[in-house]
Length: 188
Image 1 (cartoon, one colour):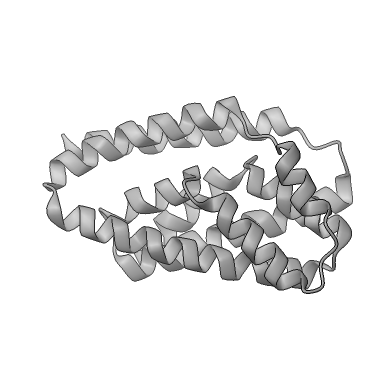
Image 2 (cartoon, one colour):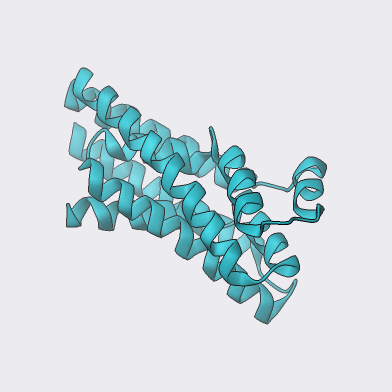
């Protein structure tokens, strides 16, 4: 379980760097107190990643291990390319973040839940759950995402707009490519 936690934490932390969810977290944190924003992010992430690991566990038990490893390696190459392309907040995302909210936790949680459906962190969690333990993957992926978003909020508040987004994106993409090579070598 600990190994699954560490792998999932690392992969999802890296996947979240430069992701639109980080930008949304920063946008929400400029309008609301940090604690309710992080609570909303945590709840949404825990739910989305619980669904992800269940899907991954079902898929993982139905397919042969070698095939899963090769598909996972290809998926991580795709995640790396997706990361290089980068994410931007759409006008709709910015409008959601700009709306006044009565309950910050519910607002942030709902927006993050919807934003994460089909996102690369959800897909990466599904992929990890096909190979690793379900509980460790769920905990690691949830904590990894919350820590990455919390870090974005903290660093964003300290440095403002001087963050080297391109360098972060390239580093995250390289990490995905390394994970892809490791998965492929382990599978073949």
